[in-house]
Length: 101
Image (cartoon, rainbow, N blue to C red; front, top):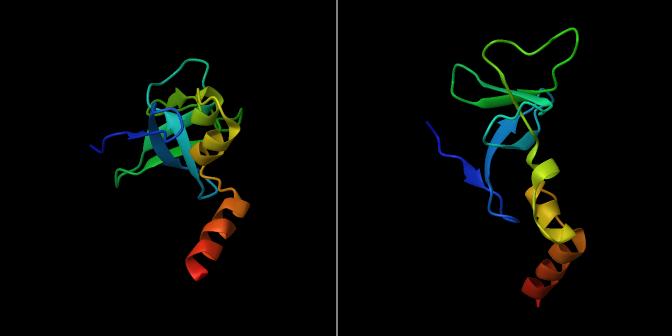
């Protein structure tokens, strides 16, 4: 069983999942009764996540988790965007310009 990852911004244990749209979503490792994301593993061991609805409620093999961005304790906004997998494009451009010189 793969070990959980850790958030680069706050150091908390997270689990990377794949949403129904094919995007990556970090969720807290421990299930939470107030979570809004259903998480389960498929037959290949991939962690999948989705938003339960009235039409497709939580199934017996899924557990509710909270998205990590909702619970991240990072103090600054910039590390939190890294937690989401977002980049500051100006920072990337500065790095590229530095390598070109």
